[in-house]
Image (cartoon, rainbow, N blue to C red):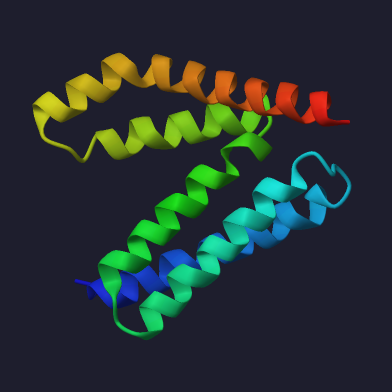
Length: 126
């Protein structure tokens, strides 16, 4: 079994690669760029907490980075995030799994609305 530290380190490294790829495409789409930069900054904080062996704080920063990234996602990416949530729900106890299964379509819609609202706010600033 992986230690908490090793598991988190691997997760942070993987997410860094994902964000760097997104950042490369976000340069082309400037409306997405601020959200990706915010996620990168939060990921950096998570890595700093990990180096201090503050595992819980590092996880919290990682999750914050993932939330910050949401407005930069396109429709297909939102669907993928929702599918990942459903897969993760399979690992939970029955009542939690049932709740997430019931609410996952709401989650997908929530992500779509959040992205739409952020795009609307950005277009109003132009």
